[in-house]
Every structure is written in C-alpha cells, then in structure tokens.
Amino acid sequence: MYDLVSAALGAQQLTQAAQLIKQWQQKNPQDPWLKLAMGQYWEAKTELEKAQVTYTRLLQSTANTKVLSQAREGVQRVRDQLAQRREHDLRAAKQQPGAEVAAVLVLEPVVGDRREAAAQGLARVTQIDAYTARTRLPSKHWRLLRMGPAGELQYLCEQLRAEGAAARSVTVNQIKSLSTFRVQAIQAVEPRLTVVCQNQAGQRGTIQLAWGDITQWVVGQLPIYESVVDLDARGKLKRKDATQDYGEIIDWHLHGRGCILRFCDRAYKYRDALPLPPAETWPSPLIATVAWKAMKRYFEAHITPAPIADFSGFGESALDFIDLLPPFEAQVDLGRTLPSPWDESFHLYSSMRFLTQSTSAEGA
Image 1: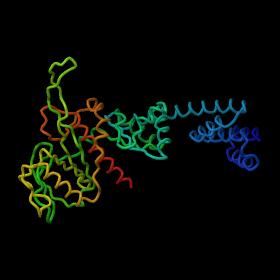
Image 2: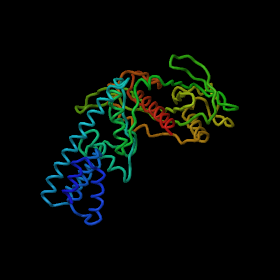
Image 3: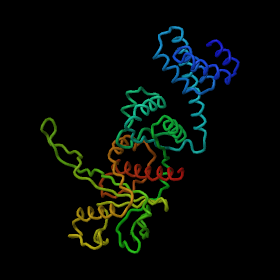
Image 4: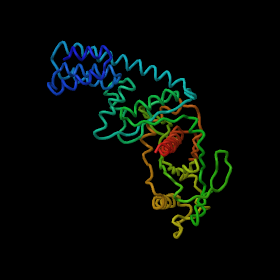
C-alpha cells in the first residue's frame, strides 16, 4: 500500500493518494508506514506544518529503522521549506510601504492549557530554544519583546498569532500622532463633563464629553526618584538616586475622538476643580492624596469598563528599549528635575493600549 501511495504522490495524483490513505486507515490505522505516507501526503499538498507534526510524532512513536530514517529526512525537508517560506515572506514584508519605520512588538499574557503551545510557537517563530521561550512568554502582564522595522515586526506579529501567542505591534509614528491632553481640572459633571486641559503645545482649552465617551482607562504608578545620602561598603558617604514615592497617572481613552485625556495626581489643580463626588467637600484642597483617591473612586463608579492597572509589569520590560527608540514626548508632568524612562514607558504603554484596542474594534 505504501508503494501505491508513493506512486500516486509522485504523479501528483493527490486525490487518489488521499483515497488510498483512507482505505489504509480503515484496515491498519497503527501502521507506521501509513503515518509516513500521511506525512508525505501533507508535504505534497504544501501543508508543511501538518507534515512536520506528523513526521515528529512518528519519530516519537515507532522503532522501525527504515521508517525512522525517512521520517528524519521528511522533518529536515519540511524545516528547509519552512525556512525558505519564512525568508520569502519576511523579504516581502520588508518591501511594504513604511516597512522601515521604527516599531515595537509586545506579547500579551498566556495562561492555562494554551501556554505550552504558545511557548513552542514563540520558540519556532523567533528561533530560540523552548526554555527561553517559556521565560519570555508573559503570564500576567504585557511584555515588550522587540523593537525594529515595522515590516519585520508586523510579519513576526502575524506569525506569533498563528501560533497561539497573542502579539501586538505599533509604530512609533502612530504613537507620536496620537493626541494626548494633560488634564488640569474637571469643572463640571452635569449636564456634561467639562474638562480643562492643555495640549502638547501647552495651549489651554476645555473639552466636553459624556461618561460613555470613555472607551477604556489606564492607571499606572511611576516611581519618583530623589537624591539621598547613603553609606557605601567602606562606610563612606555617597549620593545615589532612590525611589522615595510614586506618582499616579490616569488616562481616559476617547476612541471616538482619537485622543487621550491624562490626569496626574501631582499636576491636577485641586483648588480650581469641582470636588468629586460633587455632593461632598474635600477636607482641604491641600490634601491632594485624599482628593485624588475620592476622584478615582468616583471614576470607578461612572466609567463602565474596569481600569487597566497592570502597567508596572510592562514598564519593567520596556525600560531597556526606551533609549533605543526614536525620541517622543512622554506628556507626563510629575515635576521631575531629571527625565526618567518610566515616563516614556507609561506613554508607550497607554498609547499601545489605545491603538491596539482601536484596531481590535475596527476588525470586529
């Protein structure tokens, strides 16, 4: 039967080969030669992933030396063809308009039964070993995996999705073109929200909106560094930067208007703002922490989606990449004396959340 199937495949008579394989399965489904013929059938149909799985399983399940030898040859042929296909597709992706623009690629968390398959897919696509792939595949937070040309990263993104590893890619130009307004105060909530804010150029104005215009919101804490005096290993005084506090940022994403409204606990003008909730009065405009927490609870009661609050995990993975990216304005006002990559990291994260949520909505 194997010779008949091989002859049909050699003559490119795939329908006849499929019929022979079906008959063979009914008579002797455990025959290792049948499994070898099935691998060769998938290979002839250029369904290379199925052929690779079939050959690999055969290598793990049979002791027939002749079958093993041909299965190994089949695995090598398929690997070579897949590598050629990847090289061809990657070359085509690099030739697309805008393919050279700087971009970033992130992985979403994968948990449960899907994790092992996704890790294996990540290993195949990025050509790393399985152990390293498992350590790089996130389980709780988004992870910034790579930066590079947009064409290449978009190709990798599509390949990772096909392998079950959720990936997203955006360009730095998309991030730069996204309007971010720094909120100074909320002046009214009825009949519509009235928000006083500044644009990127520092111009002040008001925006009116409804609670339903807020399609998602992101909350993140950014470390505040201060220079402190400490003792070194020899007991001598030395200065170093240490985290003394955290500033909190809240971003409202308005997809209908294509912009972000950004609140910062250290820049919000509590004296000029309406107390939230409006029926109450804050203990004092000077007690910013109390006022900020009350306002945050008010947001939670009025904004339908729950806040996205997993920035810190992403931030750690992004710090090593920030200096390698083309410069962009962080639009974060924490009153720092020196710039911090944490600010750019948060702006990158929130912008990616905005842009990829918008893409998902368009594709729905």
